[in-house]
Every structure is written in structure tokens, then in C-alpha cells.
Length: 345
Ligand code: A3P
Image (cartoon, rainbow, N blue to C red; front, side, top):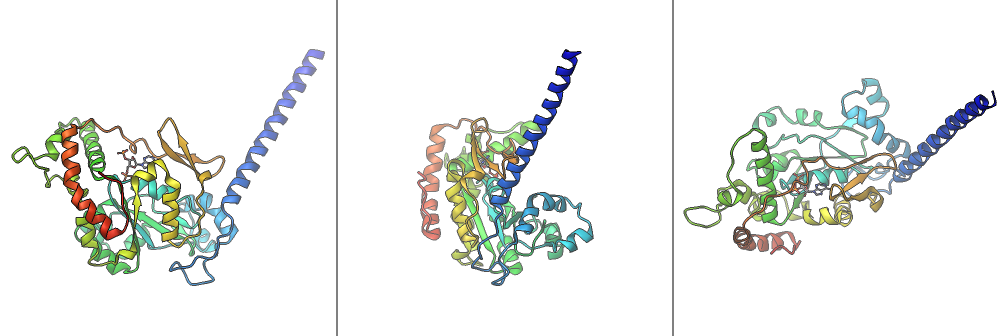
């Protein structure tokens, strides 16, 4: 009898203890997210007339939970009206470069309470069929946001596609453009690795990187190979400069975003005229992944998908040397135009 009573008491204590720990964890999580979502300082710049730049705390609290649902199209018309939500054209676009770290940049910027990301690559400006559907189609692809937030989308194909600068200019000639670059040879190998993985998945044969990057007839760098051409950053940028002044671009160091993301993100916050809200708390190094992951609050963390951060195949050193030599003059020009210098070989 005594034993039975003791067991009952132990059970009760266990339930009470679990409830107490659960509530404590919930409170800590709430405090963590509230702290991150304090009202913003007024923003100087183009993102809304003065006085409208302050985002109310209550509004911001909704961002992670409510907006997530709305983005997935679960919102009723009443909810959208009630919360004054809108689908806004992007105020900034990550136009490239493919394999530069475009996904990591978008996801990390989305940590900022005033930023809302378009989750999918929309491919509006580079795809004729999509473009023909018109700007309203594009806007409808954007997530719901509060009027004072800014929407950002990324489609890395924009950077290299001929028609895109003019089309974006026609939509908004003062839009802010983000380009994330990596050391060009590494980027080309990363590009190759992605295509290779796709081919392997379909059981297709594919050439080695060396064979594609070097023209077997001339033994020179094969400039017809897309992975090589994409890494000639200055050539693409020059096309964009026919439409937009250099001040409208911000160059992100994709290699540094891997090893030391915070200072790179702070530069972007500045460029976008956003108050500095992303902190070291939001970024933690995950040794298993070998990359920084994102921390929204004490309970919600996420790393990028496994398709980001692939192991690259070994490439013949003489080919790497040849490529680096080839990219060198283009890199110098790129530094000169952008005013951002990298320690690329
Ligand atoms: P690798 O797969 O070559 O390592 P994109 O999103 O433009 O396709 O770029 C992919 C690259 O983002 C990856 O290239 C990876 O190195 C880089 N990257 C930068 N930060 C990352 C992060 N926190 N997690 C995973 N990948 C990251």
C-alpha cells in the first residue's frame, strides 16, 4: 500500500516537473524571440516614407509564425486584411552568382525582422515564358509581408542572362542589386559539381572537369564552357552597368560568408539601409555540417540543405593554375569597377 502511494507521488512529481520545465523552455523561447524582434530604429533611405519605417513590435512578433502560414497560401482574405499584409515587389534582388552562396545569403538576410524572402527562385526576368505573364504575376509570387518590410528574391541566372538588366530596370530603376561572388576557379568547380551530381542521379555519363575546362585542341581555357564563362564576373557586370550605376550594386564576399558570415551580413544591412539587427546569436557554427547555421531563437534553428556544401572532386593542379591565370586579369578589372578587392590568386 505504502509502495503504491510512493509510486503515485513519484508519478505526480514527474508530471509536475515536466510541466514546469516545458513552461520554462517556452518562456525562454518567447523572450529570445521578443528580444530579437524589438521595434526597429527608423530607417534612412528608400524603403518607405519617413515615419512609416518603424515596425511595431506586435507586427514583428507575427513574422515567424503567422507570415509563415500566409506565405504558404493558408491565409484567409480576412486575415490578410486584418493584418494589413501585402505582396510587394522586391526592393532588392540577389542576382547571382550561381554557386556563390546565394541561398545562404538570402536565408541569412531573412533573419532580419524587416526582411521577407521569396522562398523559391522565381525566374521571372530570365525566363521569357514567365516574363510574358507580366509584372502582376511576378508580384503574386511574392510572400505576404507588412508594408514596412522589404521583400528580397534571388535567382542567380539573372546575373548571366542577356535580357535581364533591361527588364529589371523597367520594373524599378532604383532597385538594389546584390551579387555574391567566390574565387572564380572554386566557383567554377562548385558549378561543375552541381551539374555532375544531377547527371549521376540520372545515371548519365559526364566528362571530368579538366576535360571541360580546357580545350583539348588548343590546351587553353575553354571559354565556351558555361562554368568558366559564369566566373568571368566583370564581363557580366559590364552589361549590367549599361543600366544601373555601380552604387546600386553591393558585392558580397561569398568565401567570407562561409567562414565569417556576420561582418558580410552587416555590410549588406548597411547597403540596404536597414538597422543592424542580425547578430552573432543568429549564427552558429555546426561542426557536423562544416558551415554556419541559422538560429532564429532558442527553439528554432536551421542549417542549409545538404545540396549546399558539396564535396568537390579533386582537380588537376595544372588545370587550377591555368584557370587562375586566366581569371586574373578579369578579376583585376572586377576589383577596379566594384571597389572591392579580394585576395584571389
Ligand atoms: P559548395 O556546394 O560548392 O560548397 P548557391 O546557394 O549560390 O548555390 O551556393 C552554394 C554554396 O554556398 C555552397 O557551395 C557553399 O559553399 C556556400 N555556402 C555559404 N554559406 C553556407 C552555409 N552556411 N551553409 C551551406 N553552404 C554555404
